[in-house]
Image 1 (cartoon, rainbow, N blue to C red):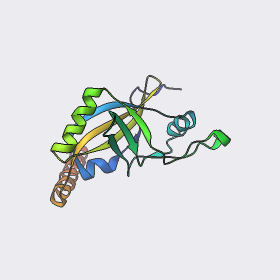
Image 2 (image 1 turned 60 degrees about the vertical axis):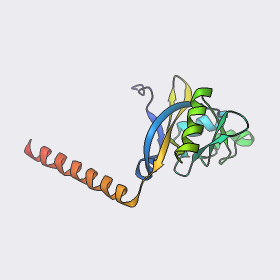
Image 3 (image 1 turned 135 degrees about the horizontal axis):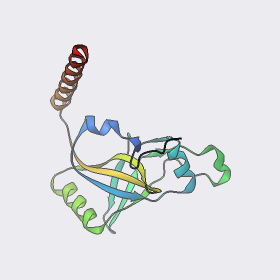
Length: 156
């Protein structure tokens, strides 16, 4: 059985690239319970409605709104699917995110959730919202790339 490549995303937030411009990305750790890890490995997680909250009193990041389904075989030791989860990052990274959120009016959104050397990692990004015309322009560019690929394939 072929081994999975390292850093392959288990869960991706595809909605984020449609709704936001990603200015900067960070890789942070995430504190999980055992049944949550098993459920993520099964792909039973959604990041579509999730965001990252910064605790003002302490230098802490929290993942809010991510839904990790209950693991079927965890019986009474199961987790609550929609709980807040603490994120682990360096203090200087947290300060940078806080400044971007306050000064630029940006938001912090989870982009990918994956495993790296046994540990669950979350890629988060400092994002700015897109206008409707930006979203339409992205769709036009994507369709143009697909058309070019179809023509190139037909020529082979």
